[in-house]
Image (cartoon, rainbow, N blue to C red; front, side, top):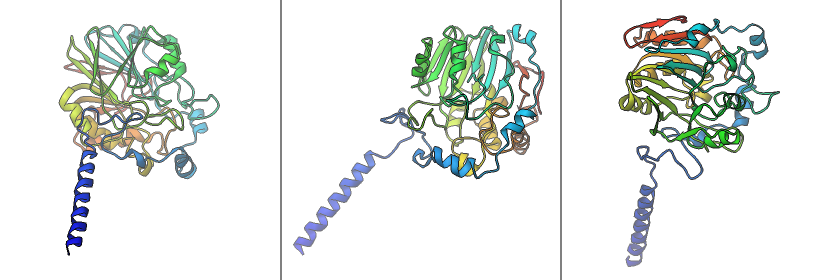
Length: 366
């Protein structure tokens, strides 16, 4: 009996000891550096280890799903486009926010004499090579040489459709680049030194513009072996002189915590740019790419007065019909009690002018 009690005591001690060790290793998403790992970064509210790899995508999604025909789309692009109003681009109203969708996630933001680009992508392919990978089926609304002088660029993450080396080289070192942690190195490899690198919730000031990197639910990687090594995020852009606030969502999946926190800490926002495309099949894409219904939730969570849908109409990245995102967005907005003007999409080249009291859309696909 005594021997049995000793064994039982040892077992209980081991159990308590193991529990104590386990308790110390419990993941706490509220820790300020919870998204940091020994080798890079992680998401806070999903298990990144469950993310399927490149070859799973190729064999289980790309070859099995009904995929839009890229070549047919290139011959007859279905995305609405309009010529850019160059006089307006060259002489924007200083007291209003003027934005022009150039394609995919690239937006020209103009306010108070400052010109900002988001995730500039002007190349033909979103790929490490020129002969393969997603190819544009709609051209950029402007050539780089037709842009006004760009003061700042914000980058959301390092995927090829958001961080393009040819575009980086074309814009050069006269632009101030704002990037998430770990992405400064790629810019440096291309001779760019005018860079500010930030962690989630960190801010940097450029004259009267404050840039804050906010969390998103996504991932990073430009090759087979560098996943999660650089950080991803979205950008809150505040024009402090006029108290105008913009949120650029980059590319993200949805959770019920982070976007509400963004709205509580930095909102409300006068205008947001939220991804609405590249979301099917849901079993594969859901954790990392929102659909239009989830985009509407983000619009509400970040407390945005007006939002514009981006990340669609340019590349075939997923299996949904390329014209579906704005249709599904209108449906989701209506079902969630939004007016037709609260969350819109633009044609490529379309300009939207936003003031604090009245909106002046040149073009919208409401």
